[in-house]
Image (cartoon, rainbow, N blue to C red; front, side, top):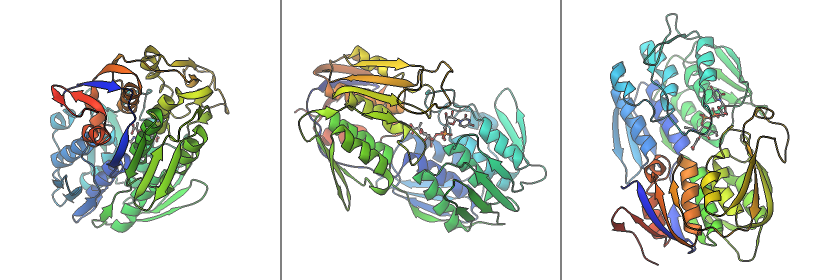
Length: 445
Ligand code: EPU
C-alpha cells in the first residue's frame, strides 16, 4: 500500500465494519505462549503489523508460528525455544515495544534475553526503567551494552514484592509474565487493571498459573514449575472501536462496529453520550451515530483503567472540534500526546495546548513544562490539507479530520496506521469514504 492517501472529505461515514482482537492484548498473549511447554492457539487475531512483528520475533526464538489470517487463528508451538542471534533481533529495533516483554519468558526458558532499542509511538519518552527494576527484583542481572540490553538470571528468578510508581500496563505485564514461573510468591501493588491485562491473566490461568487480583490494584501470583499451552479468543479492540465511533461523530455519520464490547467501553460510552453522540448496544456490537443538531463541549481527563483511555483521546479530539463551546482535555498518561493537534490547527481547528493541568487534579506532568492540556473551541469547519502522519492514533485522527473536512486532503505516511487498524482501507471503503491510495480509486460516493 502506498504511504499516501488522497481523501475527499465532507461526507458522513456510514455502514458496518468488524473489529477483531485487541492489538494491545494479542501481542502479549503470543509472548505468553513462550512460557508453555505445549502448543497454544489464539483466536480473533487481527491482521496488523504488530502481530507480524511478534510472529517474526517468536520465530527467531525457535517458536513455530502458523497463521490463518482470514480465520484470525494463530497456532504457536514453543517446544524448541532457542536463543536468537543478536543481529537478527536487532533488525527489529524500533519496530515495537513488545521485545521488552520477552525477558521473563526467555529467562525462564533459556536463562538469558536480549532487548534491542525499542520502538512504538513517539508520544513521550516511553522509558523502560520500571521493567528493568522489576527484572532486577526477581534476581535478573541487567547489562546495558552498545547494541542493546543483555539480561541473565544466573541464580534463577524468585518471587518478590513490587510497588509500581504508576500503574503501567507494560510493567504489570512484565511482572505477570515473569512471576508465573518464578519460585515463590510475588505481590504487585499499584498494578494496571486494564481489560487487556485481565484477559492476559485469563490466558495465564488457562496455562496453569495462580493469580489473584484485589480491588485495590494488588495482584498476587504464586509461581508454578511448569505451564501448559492455552486456547483463547482475544477480547475485542476497544481502541479501534472507539476510533470508528469518533469518526462517526466527527463526520455526522452512522457506523455499526461489529465486535465492539460494552463492558470494556463503558467510560468511552459515557463520554460519547455527553458529547451528544448516540449509540445502541447490541449482542454482536455497538452502533454509533451522530443524531443531528449540535454536539456539546466537555471536560475530559485521560487516565488508567477504569478511566478514559489515552488512546481514545486523539480520535475524540477531532470530534470535539465540531462541538459547540470550549472543551478541556487533560492528558495524564503520556506527557507528549498533543503533537497531532498541529495538523488540526492547520486545517482550521481552534486548539490551544498548555503546560498547566487544566480541568482536573494535578498530574505527574504538572509544573514540568509538558504541553499536556488542550482547550478545543468549536465548532470550526475543517478544511482540506497536506498532512504527515505522526504516530498510530494521531495518524488515525488525521484521517478522521481529512474525512470531516470539505475538499481534498493528502495524508502521507499512512502505513503506520496498519500497526493497529486492521484492513482500514477496506473498512473506509465499506463506510463509503472517498479515498484513493496510490493509483487505486477505492470508492466514489
Ligand atoms: N512508564 C515509565 N517507565 C516505564 C514504563 C512506563 O515511566 O518503565 C510511563 C510511560 O512513559 C507512560 C506511563 O508510564 O507515561 C504509562 O505507560 P504504560 O507502561 O502503561 O504503557 P505501555 O505499556 O508502554 C500500553 C499500550 C499503549 C497504551 C498504554 C496505556 C501496548 C503495546 N501499548 O503501552 O498503546 O497507550 O499501554 O494504556 O500495549 C497504542 O496502542 O497506540 C498505544 C500507545
